[in-house]
Amino acid sequence: MIIGGDFMIDLTFLGTGGGMPMPYRHLSSLMINYKGRKILIDCGEGCQIGIREYSLGFKSIDIIFITHGHGDHVNGISGLLSTIRNSGREKDLIIIGPKGIKDIIKGLMITSKHLTYSIEVIECEEEKLFFNLKDGRINFCDEKLSEIEIDTLPLDHSTDCIGARIKINRKAKFDKELAIKNNVPKIIWSKLQKGEVVDYEGVRYTSDLVLGEKRRGIILSYIVDSRPIDSIIDFICKSDLFICEGTYGDNDDLEKAIKNKHMTFKEGATLAKRSFSHELIFTHFSPSMINPKEFINNATEVFNNSHIAYDGMKKEINFIK
Image: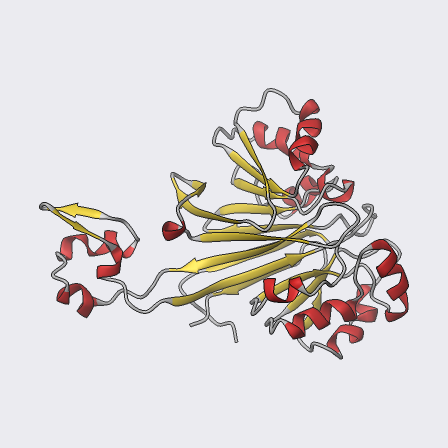
């Protein structure tokens, strides 16, 4: 069970629809808040409305993760980049996506010229990226110093599409007895506990001299616009939260799901069960599905801890004690 810990991440579902925005549902987009800095996953048209409506802020977005190049996931990029500029941002921004995302961003930026910050666009194929918080933003870093790991997986959709597995690492426990045993001066304990390397009085000290037992982090997996391929199971294994596309709720829509490279609720729940995930939340609902909750039994019959997202839904995930 997920219970209180020394830190948590906050999630806000900006939109939960797929295909086209509806009067009652914006397009699928998720905002992740980690220590006041933001990671945005997907950015369909109207994404800015949710960011403003839920008072999440634009200037603190450091990473935009795009699952694929279909319009309902990228068409809001141009306006968002301009709004981020208007917020006064000057620090670099990172955009991560599948093969071809560089050309897509280049095209969308035709209407977003004269930015006050630079953009680094990364095309990922089964790649792991490491980040930490430094100088007031999320930055690339060495694996040993990482606070956030983003892993990607190619999915089975009608265009190049990737899933995300985001791990928030947790610092190992400070071991006072170990620090004393290793003759580490008390004055530098706090720096070593943060993972820093410290040169003190002619001796180099590293964090392994004061840190003991490793602790489990938080794993968040995000899979939209794909058939339920076997590689997803290992990729999302033991996720604290698995966010999955729910384009089709009705089991009778399986043929449509296969044809359009999407999933049913039952298929998403099967992935959650087989991967030993803790909790499943569906998003990315077809415009024709007015009330996704009507079909939740198709998921809970397979995986009991299944839920339906809605626009504006907030979720906290704490470290396991």
